[in-house]
Length: 336
Image 1 (cartoon, rainbow, N blue to C red):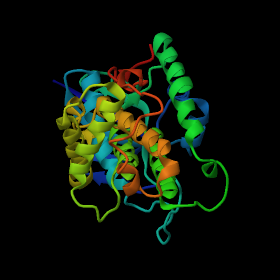
Image 2: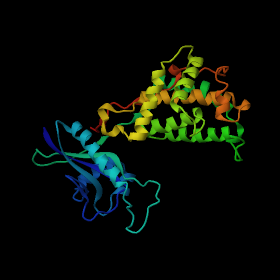
Image 3: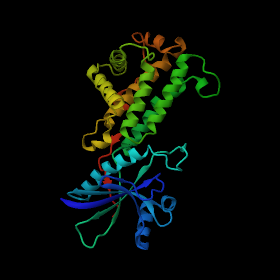
Image 4: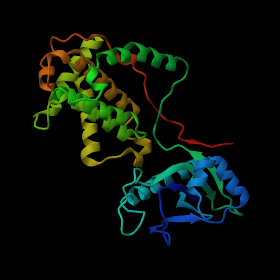
């Protein structure tokens, strides 16, 4: 095992004098960059970000001292510690002692530029690198890009035509079902803008559940999801889905919501995978098509699901047609 010092640059911190110490970790400022080091860092971060974060010859950092077998392992393990610190610091109001921040980006954010040094080497030298924390990437190359194009043209355009005109224009929504549809689309849109798996999964689940469950007073919510979603799946695919898959998604949702389980601490065995997000997204598309296909005949979620047995989809959406999101496997990429 080797001794490493890993430094993450953090956006969204303010001045701490002296630097805050949390155990053997501390929020510090790098102050002694050579001109060559500053040039390298500017190239690594991009000039705009560098100029914004660099202030009075110092930059806000989280420094982690850690033992690891190699640089990649050091960054990987140190990132977990650094993330714990910035998560806790999101509780602090940074701007001034006697004010409350209402800034949009309130929580400090670790940017994807890392400085690492092997402390066992003499003389000590710092290496600049770019890392990618666990997350999702959207692969959009060659046949996968064509698959997305076909899906958009055949499925999304069809759904778009079914959306009631009142959603495209200002005006009062005419019934509770239309309002629910608007709320659902809000959560789906929010999900698609999330970088981290847990947020994307939960926001997608909120969108889905809002179209399946009548209200907070509804009893046996899990049972209704497990009953209704497989019927929709059968109508689109001509074959049954194991109800345990729906139950597993529900259990994941419950663990994240009620136990606050988060994948960033177990990045080797993350609770939420891209596959789970794809499943929820697929069921959401089936549900929103069902709602829109039957919209003219109903005014509430409860009325809508009464039509389930007799429902025939206006277009079939098969899971294999869905453009998928993938887990990002190569977490740490360095510029050579």
